[in-house]
Amino acid sequence: MKTKIILAIAALGVVLLSPGCATRSMNTVEAAQPEGIPNMIADKRIITDPSLSRKVYVVGVNESVTEAGYKKIQVELYNRTRSMKAFTYRVEWFDHEGMIISSPLDNRTPTQIEGGQKRNIAVLATSPKAVDFRFTFLESLKR
Amino acid sequence: MIKSILTIALTGTCAVFFMTGCSAPKTQYVDSDSSRLIANVDEINIQDFARAADEMVQSIIEECISTGALKGTNGEKPILAISRIVNNTSTQFDTDLLVKRIRTELLRTGKVLTTTTLNLDTSEDPLALEAMQMEEAIQQTRLVHNYTLSGKIIEVTTRTSNLRQSTYEFQLTLSDRRGLNVWEEVKNITKQGKRPTVGF
Image 1 (cartoon, rainbow over the protein chains, first blue to last red):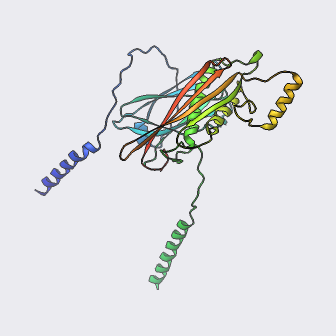
Image 2: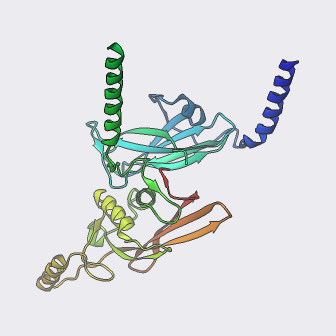
Image 3: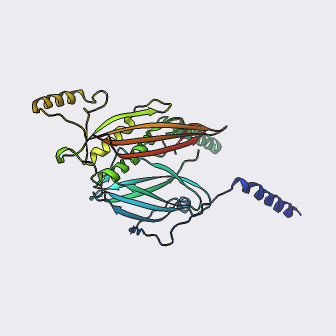
């Protein structure tokens, strides 16, 4: 009898709480045969926050180089959950000798990704010396 | 006896813990690109200027510098002068927080020359202006800019009973000597919140 009451209360709790945790997920449509062919590159990932990597999952990285030799990279992200995630990202650029290229524009950009959303973040190097990059993602601080 | 020793040891440990807590610094340095910087809704924070400048520079490089669209006089590098940047927000700040970042990064590309003498109001460097004027008198030539950068920063604020939202729109234009716009860009930074918070 006691178990039934506990189960009933638990079920009621789930029902009451679920609207509060309401999630929304994005529907997407795109060309089945895209004309653009991205130049995908092999990447190396270091995951220290598995929860974030599930919500901000890196599908792949592609790159291009402008006429004047500026490297541009694009990271395709996919939120594999049904809830929105706020995060920040930053790109660091390195020259031929592996030295970091500092800039007064260095900043950690805040952004967000909706549940089920696919989004691309494209960044252009502001120096033609930039040959390598490092993308970092960090969960936004809770307010 | 043992009880007394234990009590003293515990008291000592507690004192050490408390003292360590008390000696924690009240002020700490934070990297200017950290995610722990203070952000608030009612004003443009330093990280917002960096972000807006970064996106503007990327756009100028991609559309103008990388394509070779900016031309100088007689095959020389184009000279970029800073015109009026209007602050149409409710807070007062020095627009150099945005412009200096853009100018520095454009100069670093090596494809554009910037100037401290050809400014709208007063010369940024009076000594350089004096030298330029002397040089112009000797050589009977006049240094002219090829492009000017102008813009505006606008604030749009909305609020509900418990939430405030501010959008800061950065509008920049690059004009040539004929007054034609060779590049234009608009970037928005929108923030929501209830009170000043740490981080974004």
